[in-house]
Image: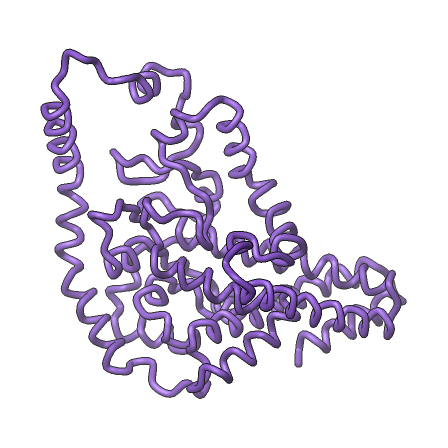
Length: 364
């Protein structure tokens, strides 16, 4: 396969110079990302007709992508079931606080959140930590029985065996010189795409009472427009709103949905230049219904002090609640009109998907 061939070329390039090995690490990381997307579709049962085949292929690829496949599959399913739901955050997603939550936090925790959301941590340190250390343990399900441990430790054993084989072939030093940059670059690519798919200015977030699955899929996931070559390496995952409408559509069928329903192309559209600004978004403003930059929020300002202030006893709770609800309805009017206008196309796409638009699971 191309990834194995590039790995062998990187080994040969060490005789020429490490600079050439590093250059080859970029395409190798891109092919590893392609493998990750195949594993991703296996987790959704979209690559093959039988679940056992999907799981076997996904688990095998997980050894190369350093991903505990079985545990990841369940966590990722939870992400799909709750994407954009403010009351079910923290499972398989990027931690995102609301403006009010950030204001109410102690100064030390606000600083920690700023560090977590900084590009250096989010796209450089966090990806390496996730794939190298975090995925070695079933964090989030440590007390959920033996199955998460079996999945995680089974993957760890397979990774250790593969690593020992490659170290025996090329030596520990060359192995680290080749594999380390591939892991860092591919991890950064994976986290960047996962970030942009849900962290854009007007992405939809809602509480349980207002959250609807198809609405969250349609307006809470982006359409990341990419050049054809990058779209191929990333398994067309830029059409993420379509993927969330029906995760059983294989990645190679997603462009067909956009061709058959061109109105979807403008929904959640994020260009590459716009995505660069998304990297600095950090807080969900429930009043404006959008993500904000830290620069747009002054924690010590009067508006924030008003947000964190305790309610006065002179104002009746029922009256305050009524006034707040009226303000919410007024601010929601433009978005509700947009949702009403797009309801028909959403229904059409869901019907299209239910009718079997994804066709055969055998790649063309």
